[in-house]
Length: 519
Image 1 (cartoon, rainbow, N blue to C red):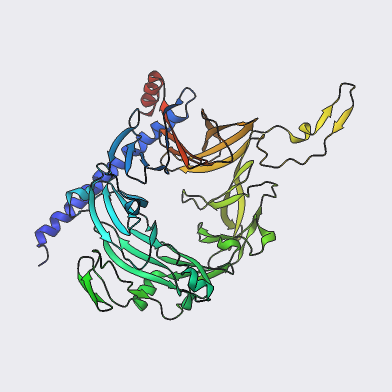
Image 2 (tube, rainbow, N blue to C red; image 1 turned 180 degrees about the vertical axis):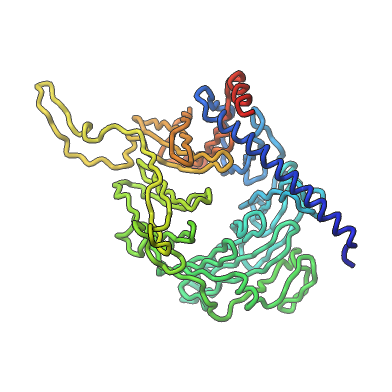
């Protein structure tokens, strides 16, 4: 029996009230973030290194939480000094968490359990269990056993905070099978779930008998993306595949029979059978060929970025309209930089439709706009450019001897020469609307890095923060700027991981002045 009319009215009223509260809260939050941005960027504000730690296992960071020992230990970075939130019991190597995503409660939704209103860590273990863990206590709230017929290894959002995709390792087949030339037909599996409460969409197999020379596949925003060894990328509607090729609908916790075996879906040892098997080639929505299968979609209206599928074209990017594959005016972007590490390009994550192109000594922000007097065609133009702080290279190539003779050195320096300031990381802090850029200079054996904050609208430099630790360009680095926090994670040789936490420190008097001005 459905709810009574009175209950429906009450529900509508409560949602309307929530809407007013959310709207008012949004205004307050924007004001507070404006104040925080002003504090972060003011000249007297410093970022102090408040905590440093080292680990023999990878360190991960997500929204104010630092994870150690394969997500077994969680440390909050929000306090004045990081503090441990929880530490889960020790487990065997086969039970360790291999990948995880942070899920946060949606605003204004009615959820079945009180624990559902708190953030959760959705975790994948090495022995194929999918867990929902309390992000504050480490308590396991839900458990789903996936399967025994493959090894699931990766987690990603299909639709952020709503639908997850669990991807298996690629099936290479046994060594004996490879020697005799027997090919394993199934390359990988994708298990798709809606979250909170967990419900199964389906488990899909990617079969080489259908997709031929397929090398990889992934799921994003309801689109199945399949990559081929030839460089071809094809996009399919996942919903259309589910409707056409689902063999049986499976519900978690319900009885199921498969291959003569009966069990409960999502419980060990039965797990979840593969219930979506593509038997005929589905109709692709779109396809394109690109070097190393590199392919991105974004912009307003929709455009995509590829590199022509030839090795000599590496570093050349084509920006084309999705609707008709037409190249945008000025849509071929190339920095023509001479460097060991190639430049990279991507659609700006601020949903402005702009494009960020990063090279060793410059960050170009490009905008996509209609061609004048031709609304059907679009063009690419520079919005602004951020340049590295470098000396004039021509002056460095000239030496004056003691006798006054001018000697020109015939040396071609690389654009990412370690003795010159070089951009290593570019990110976007959405809540403060700032671009963060990590620049590094290697002096003798020691590298020095600083994190710069730039206005996202104009590119103006607003703040520069020196990092006190040495930066070795041969190591792997991650830098996170999250409101009033800066966090640097590096991986050194022999699997030694280090984490450096910086927090904002400002003059209380100036902080009060900014708050008063905002009022």
